[in-house]
Image 1 (cartoon, rainbow, N blue to C red):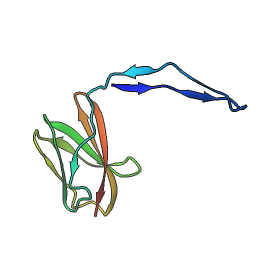
Image 2 (cartoon, rainbow, N blue to C red):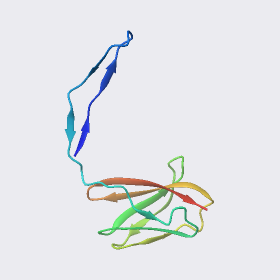
Image 3 (tube, rainbow, N blue to C red):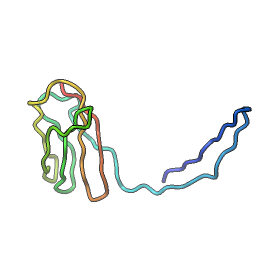
Image 4 (cartoon, rainbow, N blue to C red):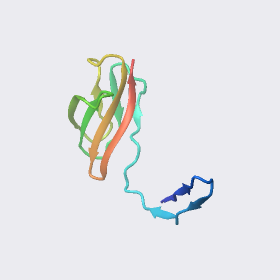
Length: 102
């Protein structure tokens, strides 16, 4: 469970808090990507076949495919060294994790 509240600060420095809002997690977790940084491939854990995209920092799709269940590996040898994002579309939602290609 996640708990949130807002703090509003007025120009005179006084502040008030909103009531606490409780949010039940959607089941979407952070992707466990390894190795990171990577040289030739990245792997992650997948409970089922999962569509993926590798994006550059501008959000442009560079690699796409569907990863099999288990610990699939994505070949990133053709990518230039730099920072990228792995986007996974799962039944519980979209997950994005940053990784570095050396």
